[in-house]
Length: 451
Image (cartoon, rainbow, N blue to C red; front, side):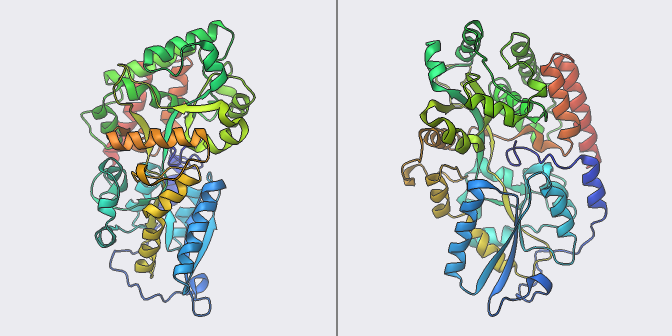
């Protein structure tokens, strides 16, 4: 999945509209920062309380909380109070919390129209440009990352305008593989798309499952599409879809060719049987037990895979069509920290966000096996595992080459209703590729028109 991995899947577009329709709050970047709060924001003795919401879990949540403890140690007059919500229910609960009389000060969002767009359009988040200038956020992150951090203040256009979210951790989609099984195929790590397809065919002939994939919730199939479109669609096509360029359409040649390739892979027996009835967790468990040569998935799976398989699992980005070309990858600069519109502690909130996104924390993340939006290749200690080291090196190469591409489902809030099921039908051969992409494009056009 990918809440910043991909769009949150706990809320349909209809539910988004229903929640937003009840939200009406005043906001503005000039709200006072006097520290005077009421209710659950009241001071704890002589300490100010900063209310923070996050959907993080596992090791990343632990590192976030540890970093927040370091902030409190440096600012003993401040207490950080975390509210942690389940990933699936987080978007709906966050919208309601921000519309309440006791909204938090700092919240994690999600890029594009998956969550940030509706919140900005409803006036629930404030633009961060004053603090970006103060702390250098507009220079801290590479240009390829900054576009994902921006929205117009009316919430109508993604990819330009003010900075709204400051990220701290990132993710990237690629290929995990079973080291022993790939070695037995005899070709080594594929250097081109052609070599990868050759490995699929060799694996199939020898009785292996070439691609282990669980597509029951439908979004993993779109992740597989990301991998192929990184090779076959242009930067202009992918960025155009995400950032609202009407001269680009889902029916452009690169997308049609990508969709047809996936349908062909499935028809050729390269994708695991029962893919559409298998959950991502089941696919991961089968891969850990030795079923499948390749697992197309996001970097957030690394800790679990490394713990279960040790050095028998490794990672590479999608190989290019032509050997030696820079590898392009779909990924995101991750969740953004936001200051809420009604916070009375905006300056303190910005100080906290700055501390949580500095290079020092990026180094801590890398040491723990995670990745961040910052190019820190020369400043990182030894990776905790082979897999973590490969993902870190791959991610740094994408930042250095400027070849990071955004998630296509950042383009609209209705991926769960249109994009995911249609892509599932295309891969399964139930609908012809171009016909399915026409349905997705029609939905996108209606969304853009509504803006």
